[in-house]
Image (cartoon, rainbow, N blue to C red):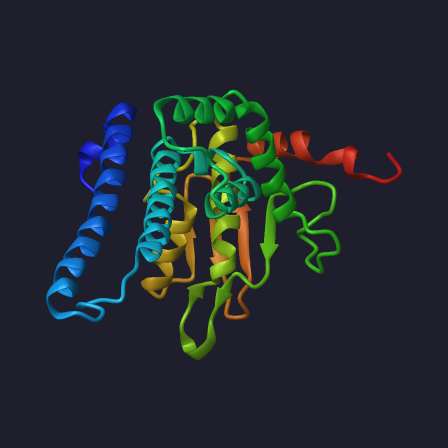
Length: 255
């Protein structure tokens, strides 16, 4: 992918998508025609048993896959995946996989993005609430984790795989860490994390260099062979903001 795609106008994406659909159809038509030509000469199945009904199915499959890639490209370039919570990202991906997103047109792209961006206030709150829930699991055995609010630090288990003397981030923890980092960036008014910046990259780099600690703009991070991650928060004002938005008395059963 070259730098031009980042700034490619929506109508250009749509025009190329429409042309690609025609080319996919023409490509399968050419296979059928070529096979028919050889079949007329030598009989039998020709060089392929590819049937028209197979072509229809393959055309539909390939166009649907192309449509998924177009929508993912649009969401990535517009930072939609970084603006929304992990749960909302999963919902978008589920819609993509089920083919529930509309056909790619200038109008549908604009209306889909408008619908998401007009709801940005609620999306922001969801991201902060999700990060809060990640940091304060009820019933945690670690004293640094409280159920009703986030403190100066937090401890998370099962964040690293340290078997065989190596240290690498557990696969399942990546979306949680990205959401946490995005929440702090958004609360600070800086917009979502831009790759390759952010906490996840800092942790991954440190692991590759056989280090056991890292630091970012918002976090001091240290981890241990048992797989726990210790997070010290550098911006307690943002921690307080998170608690005000997602924690506190609203969680207490006796409040």
